[in-house]
Image 1 (cartoon, helix red, strand yellow):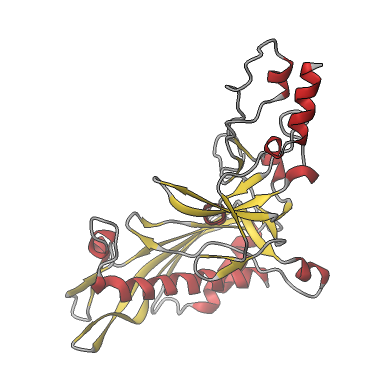
Image 2 (cartoon, helix red, strand yellow; image 1 turned 60 degrees about the vertical axis):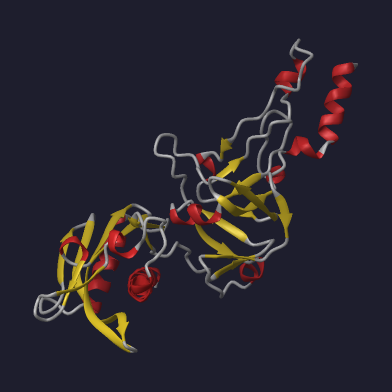
Length: 322
């Protein structure tokens, strides 16, 4: 009778349903300074990014220190307080599925600062820990960067068949650690289809061989060596300074996915004038101080370089999706 009463109380308790930590907030929220997401939007999943299991890393059931599992309740141990549900990543079988954003939660930690997580009500999707349904937390920006989330759409768009849901991927950003690759999941195309479409875009977008150098490995990789002309990189006494910015744009192909990588500047990140003299440097060691803050003299170059990378990456993805 005692165990039956405990089970009933736990099932009726909100804590049983794997509450997401933090403080519940109303949306919409803004990601990457441009992307607005609201309650009721639908996220389209790509593939899990855990290299060992294939599970999702940035969609997970948070650790719950107060909830007990059915195993604990039916055990002979009357002290249930020390049992807890550990953090569990969303299973790889959810790849290519669609999930509805139920709400948002603001969490804080000394290590990671303030973050806003999405909350997915999983009652409609699966059982977790016996009869317990657990909400899923979504760490949006790393999920988008890793390709775990590939699209976000409002329900209104789904009702209009003529509407096309834009493919979602994270922007390129120069950080103190360098430039992270961007992975884009395009699940309906094979590696050879992705390669052929990208090669068509390359041939129509670049002047070959007078300016750009293209190196292609069929079905695997395309490398583009080129430079962006007249890029603002600073000011002196109110006058803007310009230079040509060399870049290497590499696109790797696998079935249903492309991986884009940028390397900026010449040797060691140097930017030179027409006489070969070094006039700027775009390597992180020259753009950030020891605290990870962008140096004032590098802000213009950082913004312009990021715009170049993001314009090119969006151009190739848009072409592929045509």
